Length: 165
Image 1 (cartoon, rainbow, N blue to C red):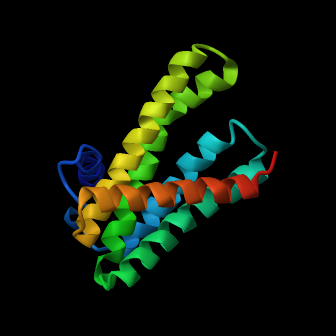
Image 2 (tube, helix red, strand yellow; image 1 turned 135 degrees about the horizontal axis):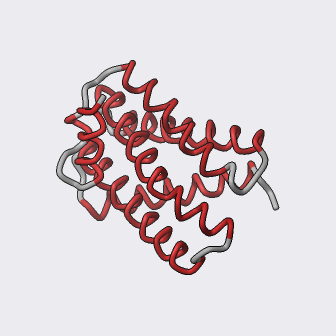
């Protein structure tokens, strides 16, 4: 497990790519569950538990669906387990780092600093997603960052539909 966490850190630091993860269904399932738990922890600070669970599951399924669709169109289906594991693991890791900032914004302590840190983590998440896409598809940084941006904006829209104001 320590090796997987270290690999995910290296992916988030742009030192490794999804191809460095083992193509394992078990790893994919484990990271799917971990991502749902971390996402649920973060979302539940702002909404009720049922909606939080729905959004956390939807978020993980969006990642898997996006990965499958992107790799299907690129005819690189064999990279699905590694790419999806990298996307789920990076999302869980960055979301885990965002938990203290989200909690402090919720209780109103250091809200401006927490907001700035949260924005920085969102930009980092975008860049890491682009990095994973670039390695999975063999595309340029510009293309990968654009695709990552479209995915992230689309997922925010789906989350907003699941929790209307």
